[in-house]
Image (cartoon, rainbow over all chains, first blue to last red; front, side, top):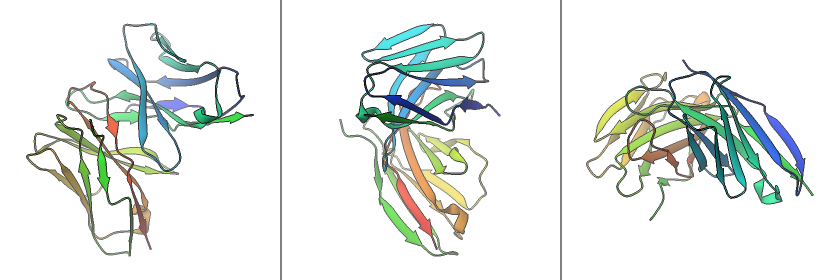
Length: 112
Length: 113
């Protein structure tokens, strides 16, 4: 099956930028996704990028996609304590229907 | 628009029992997927239903089953519970296209003792 990899931990200072990285294996993925999970909650869709795009910006979030290297990153500008959470990247695996493959998640800690 | 609703939020069961979890999707969404989340295995796909038919299935034993009703609401059932079934079970709905984003509920936390 497909595989999605992420580093497990990231710590940043409040006000700095955070960059969360992800690598994936399915070159046929049309969209790639970023989700956020706060304690005790489900996954919140943050943003997604179409595979023929290199970059997508949405307020403080910037997604960069390097399709050749199968590398995806999420940059959070001006990181706040409320951004502390686990961030998952995901790709859609199945050619029929839906079967998302998620990375292990990156736990972002924002230090005051 | 109301989000995905999962009930109950918490469940405590003993080994050998069975359990049924419920999910109400976002209005207009015809696809419902179920995922199991554990600290050790992360997020694992259980199955997906679309228009009352199971369209995709993950690598879980037959003790895990589900169904979808004509109003798109879904239930999943786990029979003969094992300690290892303790997990957060997440339901997600979408419009159903391969790349339609999933929208998740807050999950049902199942503890098996």
